[in-house]
Length: 124
Image (cartoon, rainbow, N blue to C red; front, side, top):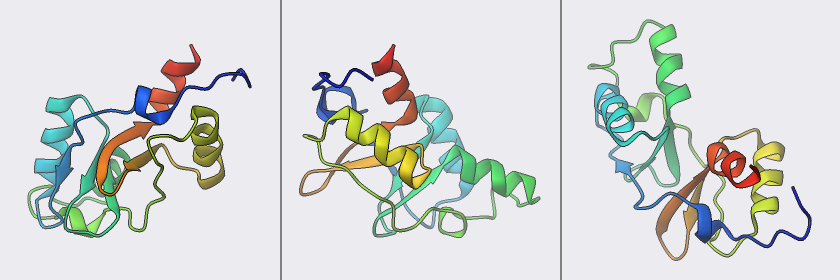
């Protein structure tokens, strides 16, 4: 990434933020992701959690029933977040450091999501 690049998260984050409740079935999470062409949802009743396509794929690989298993059973807890004014090179570094593909964007409340896809599209 160009070190002179001063693009902020707010310029590339996905909005509006898509959310789901922790007690919703994984099938509903998968449907929402598919319909919205997104790969993660912020969990509104989890307190700083997200559920990702990878979480759902893991549940399928374990043989879980997507209608019976709820988001809470597979969600990622205590996720790192970023602010809308953070520079994209810092986001890329955070994703690498924490080994994550999604970072919720928080400005007093959740306002969006930045993903590794957003970073890759920004780089190209």
